[in-house]
Length: 121
Image 1: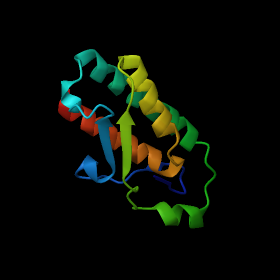
Image 2: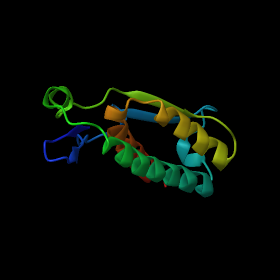
Image 3: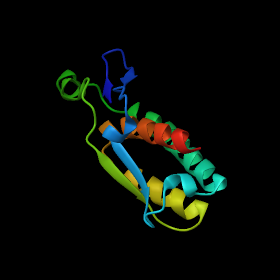
Image 4: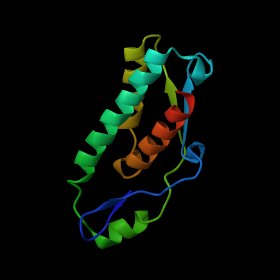
């Protein structure tokens, strides 16, 4: 993610979300085998994280040199491993791991997580 001089946030579109993020269960079970309410809770957590990320990113100061380093650059690949057995525990583990990501890559990776969840819901 980078800022333009006019204050707009930009992300890199990735054709395959797996190039920037993997989402797995600590149990090794396929994500698609989660109960529907677990998947719905994960989607809600991702949406809430996106909103928070946008709010946080909007406060970043603009510096042309800093932004040039991120412009059109895809984020590195991150592995998110969901722990816990309840929908709330799994959502909390997702939030904790995403919050630990650098703000500059977080929005791109959240969008990829959203795409991955859309595939299994």
